[in-house]
Amino acid sequence: MEVAYYQDRFLSSTDELAIPIQERGHQFGDGIYEVVRVYNQKPFMMEDHLKRFERSADAIMLQLPYSREEMKAIILDGIQRSGLDNVDVYFQVTRGIAPRIHLFPDTPAVFSMIIRPARELAPEKKQNGVPVLMLEDERWANCYIKSLNLLPNVLAKQHAFKNGCEEAILVKDGFVTEGSSSNLFVVKDEILYTTPATKGILHGITRKAVLQLANTLKIQVKEEHFSPSFLKAADEAFITSTTAEILPINKVDDVLLPTDHTVTKQLQQAFQSLK
Ligand code: PDD
Image (cartoon, rainbow, N blue to C red; front, side):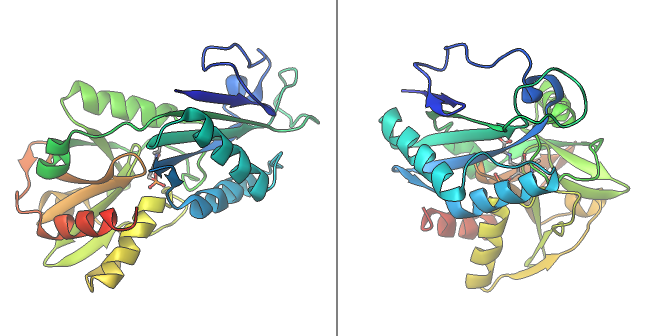
């Protein structure tokens, strides 16, 4: 079953009303979040997610209400309560409950969490790939922070979906940054390219896993900025995220990419062994 948690307690269900109207997350999007995938009751790369969460908190000067060990205990308790083997754990911390003024309130931050059955992608998509649409990256300069403010991401994803695409690939100043909810990799002449982990993209945990696997598999990697035309001329391209894992791209705007996903398949296979 689904599990929900808000401010120090598990709720009776995900439908229980729990968030006060004057909540900083609700009113300002003033908070941060993480999504962790659980395979067979085992959270995948949880330590990395918690570390990134702490970095996001520091970056927005937010004092987390729990220690890393306390957060781990709540997450593991939630997974147990779900009674499910494969789930997505969503958790966030907001700057708390206080009358709406922009300045930071003097109230404690609030942790909340939702655990749901994992959203499995259709096997055909993992096998054959998905189409993507390139759009202008209209986000702010600090996309390395996993902030609750996702309006540009939501709009881009919706626009891509309306155009029959699985993901929006964002382009800033003539260079590809990342997807609306994923990181991006390109294979060209047997070299794996991905945008460097600057402040302009989220430093994805799946991205990190793929870079480690590429190292193990002796695939040459270049963390470099690249252009939309480089993506369109790719031998292979794929996106990565906690929920999508490694997902090949078969079409960029109206350009079909080659269907031979040799390197992508190698990485997909190696990724399975990490779970
Ligand atoms: N999104 N870039 C953006 C903008 C993202 O939102 C995400 C993840 C990623 C991939 O990061 P990771 O490999 O750590 O999941 C990259 C999550 C899954 C979400 O918002 O649902």
